Image (cartoon, rainbow, N blue to C red; front, top):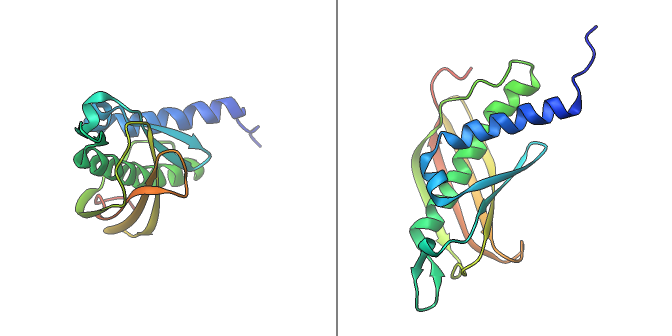
Length: 160
């Protein structure tokens, strides 16, 4: 019987897998999106930057930047759920092909203020061909969402 791997080795492997997944989305790098991982749960972070402002009079985050942030959070959550299953089954962590967006609907609930934003995505359904994801975004208070979205995605072929 093999001894279990040290916790630090497992953590480093999971962090490297997540970094590789996020690196597969160049626009995430442009926006500065990062992810905080706690076990299998991801929280996306959009650090404030001046170039994210759409309305300098208010000032408010650009709607396109908010939508892109939510879509990236959804896609990474889907990719992470595929990676996580493989890692936990002992299959290694080869990076999956990312799902393709079928449609993505954003609800802008209030203006995004000029500060950091956070988001969490929840996979509602994920099958061989199709997935549905809901994303919620907040800034200072987790219970005061400033945007939410629902997306439908075409899953990459050959996953199972």
